[in-house]
Length: 160
Image (cartoon, rainbow, N blue to C red; front, side, top):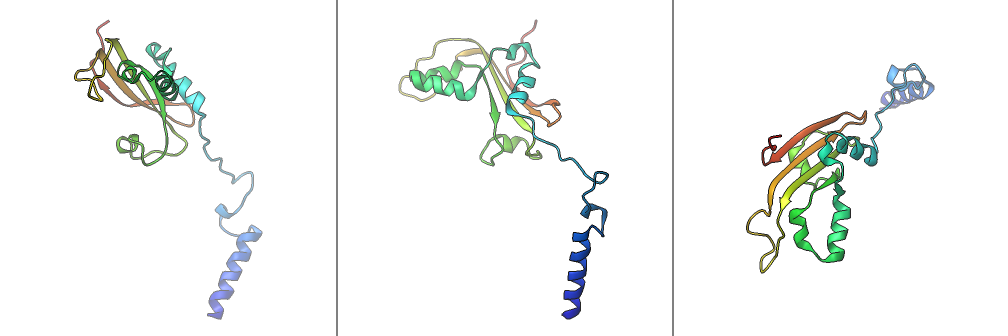
């Protein structure tokens, strides 16, 4: 037991003094810069700039506050928006994207066009989609600003 303690003390002393494996040293030559997270605002700007249709989208949280203030719940069904998804395990995006780092930003974009007014009667959801066209995308923004589309679903793109 005494020998194991001596070896542990020797290794600890060597690592603390800078004598030891290269990963224990902290010199300019050996320093590794860790990737930093891209800001929420920068990530949103990169995604919204990637397609001219995304230019005037409102943030999901802002839309939610407006709808709550007006108590106009039917507006959810005919709104286009973007939202930055969080890193929590409760987020549905985690079921779609299994390998990601905390420095990445996931951004969802929802577009809906040619929507009719919705009147909610006794049910919480409309029977039919009130919009003639609806599409959804999920983007990842890497710490270096690279934007990649991970997922898209909905109606086919309209023919131009």
